[in-house]
Amino acid sequence: MSGDTLVLDLVLAGLLVFLAWRLLTLSDLFKATVLFIVFGVLLSLAWVRLNAPDVALAEAAIGAGVTGALVLDALRRLDARGPADEAQPLRLNLPRLVGALLVMGLGAFLLWSVLSLPPGWRGLSSETAAAMPRSGVVNPVTASLLNFRGYDTLLEIAVLMLAVLGVWTLNAEPMPPAEPAGPILDVLVKALLPPMVVVAGYLLWAGGHAPGGAFQGAAVLAAGGILLHLARPFNVANRGVVRLVIGFGFAVFLLVGLTLATLGGRFLELPERHAGILILMIETAAMISIALTFVVLFVGNARDNAGRDTS
Amino acid sequence: MTPPIIYASAGAAVLCLGLFGFLAARHVLRRILALNVMGSGVFMMLVALAARTDPPDPIPHALVLTGIVVAVCVTALALALLTRMCRDEGSALLPEDRDIE
Image (cartoon, rainbow over all chains, first blue to last red; front, top):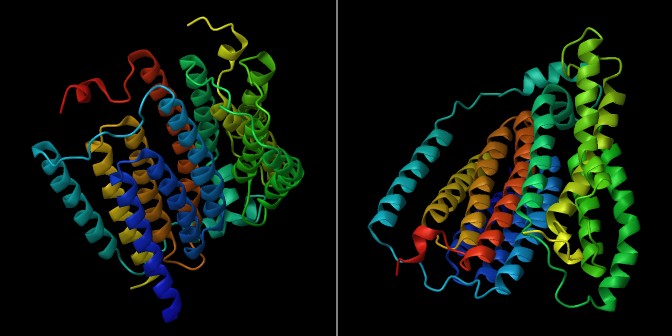
């Protein structure tokens, strides 16, 4: 480890802590949100430094991108209903003081546990490496997500569907962009959308052997959809076809698992010979569903706009 | 001082800042931001400790990927709840925070 990269790591880690502190203490919520997005982008740099390119891609696209867009949009909607700012800065009263002391204790405990870990501990990397030849893919993160820990990923896609259901039920979303977007955004969308679709497809395909996968591809596709919505507002109403596409990824994943179970295997235990093609199938379906899910989470339920709101 | 130790320590600090913000903040949007910051701290610790071997342990990476997606879902649902509360009750603070100060 050379001195230069050590300085970079120290500065990056220090900046992350500083940004986290500032974004929680600034009284202007808009500035705090912008700092939050910067925090996400710097965090994806930290993932690269820690040899986690898969996580870096997801963080940049989902953590900073989609979450940032969601929070900014919510802030705009709150602003329309009154001041969104926190009027007074936080005063340190007794409950907050006790809370701060408890949290500091937790921090000290965590720091102690990090520093006291045995140096030679290898985690699960040996077991994963031993199981890789049977997984059907070369990228260990994809193998872990879609094969070794398939159950988690199946339920994760279910959580995405639940979030959409919640947003639809609350019917809290609708509001078209305040002013029509300028011609620059229009041109930008026209130029960016085709490469974005290609990049999403590439990320999906690359997930088998290099950093990438369904979630990263879906985030890029969803970013394209959100950009398109900002340039030319469209409605993704709670219609049958939308529901079908959102449930598609979960259905394919579940169907693969059930088929394997009825054919004599175990639920979601991919057979070695067909694992590669099954993973690609599940990932393709999941990517389409997840991308639409993110767009729906952003655009929300458009029933208000159509004037058929019942609430 | 190795990068895993640096980032794991920073992760612990970020986690604690987020947790305190989540407990202490009054505006619900700030609490949602704090929840995300707290999650990022957990992710930093997980990925940093996975990087102690070469190549890094892929299982924590997969866990963090799942975590990032679930965090977005939680954020979207929380923001929808907040917007609905704001629309129905005209305040972005939780009821127990409204009369204080």
